Image (tube, rainbow, N blue to C red):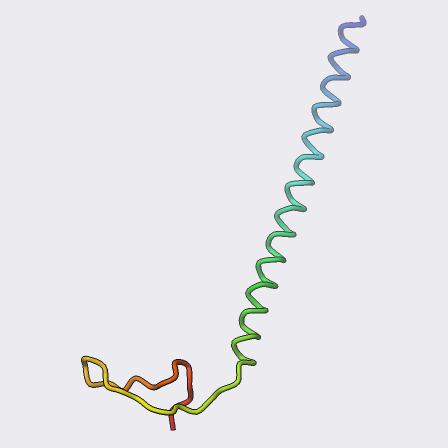
Length: 76
């Protein structure tokens, strides 16, 4: 009899540990997804909030297209 009880106890511990591992993995996955979406949102907002400065000059690239200076400026 004691061997059967020991096996049941081991199985209960194994099932409990498996459930705990699954819950922990799910929580870590959700936290990672939230962090990634917040980082992407922050990057988008910072680029929108960047001050736009007027271009001061330009030069033509090898195809004859104007390249404005400084990079990221607003052409006239």
